[in-house]
Amino acid sequence: MNAVVRNAYTEGWAAIGNSLPRPKAVLCISAHWYLPGTAMTAMSAPRTIHDFGGFPRKLYQVEYPAPGSPELARRVQELLAGETGEPGIAVELDQSWGFDHGTWSVLRHVFPQADIPVVQLRIDETQPPEFHYEVGNLLRPLRDEGMLVIGSGNIIHNLHTYAWGKHEVEPFDWAVRFEKLARELLLKGDDRPLINYEFLGRDALLSAPTPDHYLPLLYVMGLRREDDRVSFPVEGFDGGSISMLAVQIG
Image 1: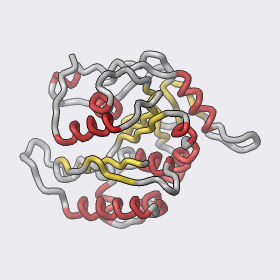
Image 2: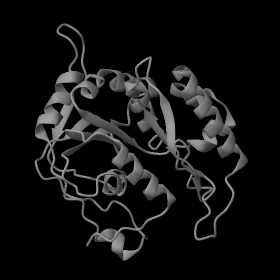
Image 3: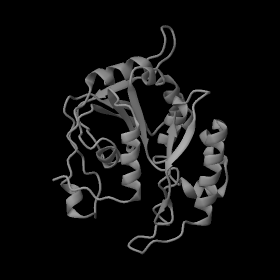
């Protein structure tokens, strides 16, 4: 079953997909694969994972049958290994994970035909923010090789303050302020404060009380080149404390 629920956000994701040249493959960094160690999905036919609870039954029936790409997984492993004589990042080639909802919930709108190979990169929960930004730097060659890199998370993601089961609510003041600051820094190319976001005060700590949903942004920032344009093709807040802002580089 692949019933599609449409709203302003999914329509925005679909518009992004329609505006992009067709990539050879997609590398997705999802907030929902957040464990010790860096890893890549390396199977040819990844499974669709329904890694959530308490949602409508139809969501558990969604499948995203895109192929995997062991070749891209090995290429990422090669890039992160570093130059000869330099310390690199060990990358496990995983055969058990698949596409979690951080990946398929977005890609089923961006590339609904599910005919483009996709791999996921695991976020190493033991590493500081700087590490994740540097991984993005190391992945830059993929852009010249026809690959699309997606970070699936939220600049602001606070479920403790989320308005569960309520009608549409206005976003919290702290959420609005932090998103505004993040936009300004991204447009200026001032990466350092966003890497060290934990030192940006109370608004930042409320916006990202845990790192998992924030860190995908740092990979995307690391991929940026000096002359890249930054845009925000999808905007809005959900439940008062989740930013749906999409950041597009290039």
